[in-house]
Length: 345
Image (cartoon, rainbow, N blue to C red; front, side, top):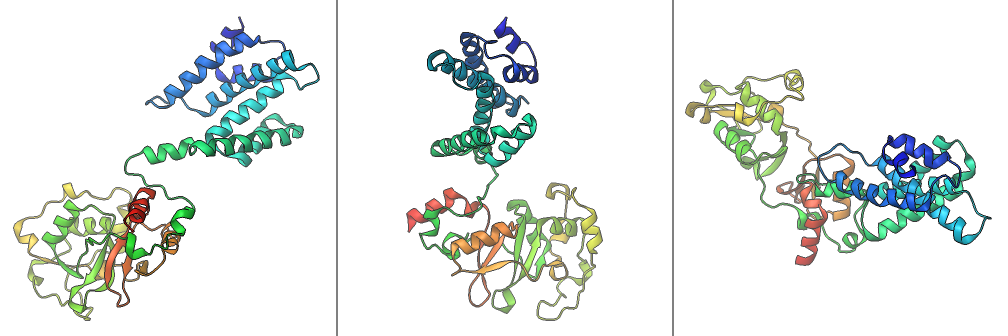
């Protein structure tokens, strides 16, 4: 049975049959009866928590549809056409290209699989057509899933043309509610901020020197400092905050913080008492004193490129006096957030 030979065999065998069998081996009705339920089930199962895959189902459904199209051309269009198994190859490439939108990579992969260079031109034409046609309606499937995943903000290579023409600056898209630490901070304040605002990085602002940006520090470093209890009750109130770099608190070497990767402690596993909360913790020895920052008058396109190319998780925005006036995160550069700023302007 033709339909049974496609359904009840593994996908690789079915693809091999569609690619290599004689042109009249499969009846068009059998191909249609296989194609419609198979691509429907592949569409449904990809959206549920089942490791069904999508690469091979796209190849198989495209091969069945391509062979069906080739058979119909031979029935209604004459005999001076390519064989239906060649249409099967082109159909498999087209469906896969419409899903993944990778024209050049898929052309190379399929050419290496077939070992026949005479299919270069039809493969490139079909893959580019599938990519351009799919791009008119929606993004590729992988980008759709990234945007559907809550908490994951994906930044494209470049800003859209609409964003670049709006003349937005960093000061318009930054988050103005800055959560920061002072160079010497209370242990209770550090613990409460880590508990209520679990960001990846925090600016360090020297409030005793005109709110000048001192540096930045990561959440994982702060957790290790609290876990190692890098504060001393006897030094409480004796730590100088000015330009004096003398350190009164015990230090944790970089090797210790680096050794904790990737199993950093959690804030829920750290417990401090009331006496600990009143102690001072000196963040100056552990601060990154040259963090990435941009001026508030910096163009959005430049800030976007800097954030993406430098792999930043936090981009600090300063004014001409080097005072921290805001921060830029991935959420601030998301298309939805930028559209909101454009509408406000």
